[in-house]
Amino acid sequence: MKKSQKHAEKLIELSPEHINAQESMIRLALVRMDFLEAKKWVDKWKQDHILLQFQDIIFLDDFLLELEIENQK
Image (cartoon, rainbow, N blue to C red; front, side, top):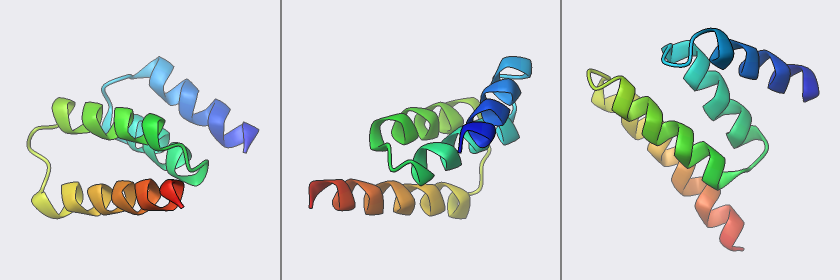
């Protein structure tokens, strides 16, 4: 996991607004089951990329909801 975290952080360092860099951070936070970090990145992703397709937004919102429910157990 450390390698993937370093890779994602490097992508953000090189290009913080790039969609792939942000999605890497989102996926990493989801894998680590870190709801707050994932939500932070999803919100930034939505703000920076306002022309996203509705199905992409719903896809990540569903993952966030699942993670939030899992964390409440």
